Length: 446
Image 1 (cartoon, rainbow, N blue to C red):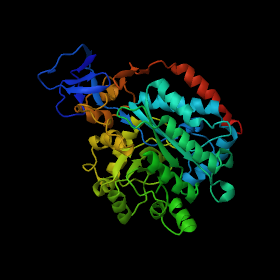
Image 2: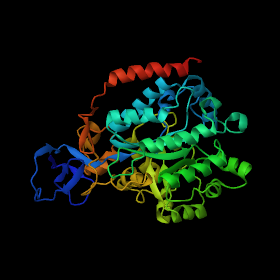
Image 3: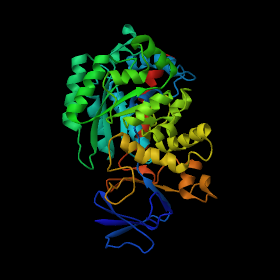
Image 4: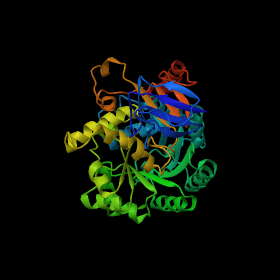
């Protein structure tokens, strides 16, 4: 079936004044002023909608939806925040609560216009050996694309780290499961719905050997690598004290300076380090919302791009962002970018590009992230009917400046996955109730 998405208010693509035509899973035509050049089978009236590529989230911690705005953790920077929450996660996280946390995070992302998600999964409670499988199942249930990261922590508080040992697995178990997950879920084909990346958590809670061995596995299986780096000054001090070098030097020591890598946060890089990141075409996931909540700093987005690095966007953990809304993250990226660089230096199109094309490149994907012939039909459609948009002149700019946060329609691979603002097949009221009950366990000690 060929479907013409007809006469939208605006499209984030050149030459698509009258919309686009989708056949099966792909975009097959951008429709200019004269209308479609080939026959089509049906029409979707898009006259109320602005169409952008489906948003791509490149960093998250799904399980953290269970501890949003936790009274013991608010108003703290990263390390004190982590030291507060790790014991709570160790006490109360289990596979059933984890599944609900994943379902909520993915549903929120989808409703915000996100079509591809990536979670940085590194916690494995005693009954959560199949945590990656749970994420794969929940993404498939919603019809979303996902990059599954098989992460780990193996330096706990007893070994000089800050993580809770109850969320850790032994070294052999981690490596064996990395290979299992890669064999089961890593699909390198165009249009894949699941890919895998290996993702040791951060320099301050994994061993050097784990970093080295996952880099080797990534070469063998042709997959991406992901970790936190350059997020806080505390991290700089930790690496200097324990490794005798800065975080990026450590990354090079363990064999991670390659195009396979994308990093979360990437805030505290100096000029020389920015050049090195660009030289190796490393991706950096900018997480503006959580960086502001934790007062971590501002990612050097423009310098990174100018050097040749790739910039994407992520919402980061739902207990440091307290939301899983990537469209909200786009607005925050614009605002904090302008605060750093000036009003004319970061545009709404820059922020939208980071959340779409840039994020797709961070994940190593060329088949999503833009509206173009041959690309996957992953689209987010927003209406401008709400009062917040009244008087807006530029529809695409209005999505960002006026604060769009909920898509009216979302298409993934040619299928509608959100219709009239509601995710297909999801009982939101029931999900809210079940997740709320699960989250209560993390408040019991108060």
